[in-house]
Image 1 (cartoon, rainbow, N blue to C red):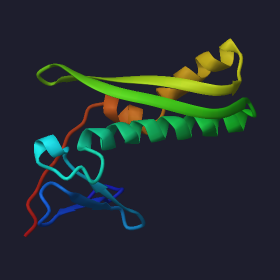
Image 2 (cartoon, one colour; image 1 turned 60 degrees about the vertical axis):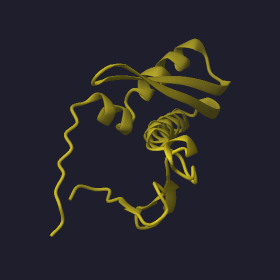
Image 3 (cartoon, helix red, strand yellow; image 1 turned 135 degrees about the vertical axis):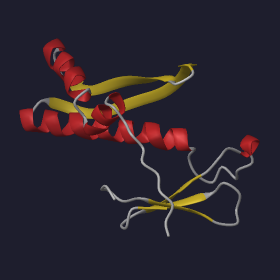
Image 4 (tube, rainbow, N blue to C red; image 1 turned 90 degrees about the vertical axis):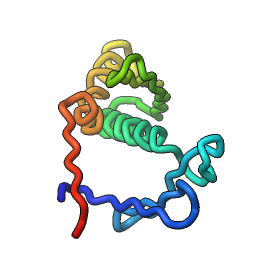
Length: 132
């Protein structure tokens, strides 16, 4: 099994899933209109949050190494299914702090280098098995 290992377990509450990675525990769910309790974010929100988290952390780390005047990052994400098998994720990055235009342009390049961005824009294969 590839790392990191995440476990998703569903019980008797319709569509509410407990997620764990060994150190953290959180919920995923469907909206009420889809039969869930909406006790946690939807799978789509969880996917977008991974990209948002990775983008914000990557930019903060980079600016810190460069000792640039970055004071915060906000990442606004959405998605649209444009055709069967084609999804576009929109990512608006808001940089807070004292950065010049050259630094801002470099930060946009660095955003595309975050590990989750690379995963989502690369070839993805999902291998499923049934446990014995």
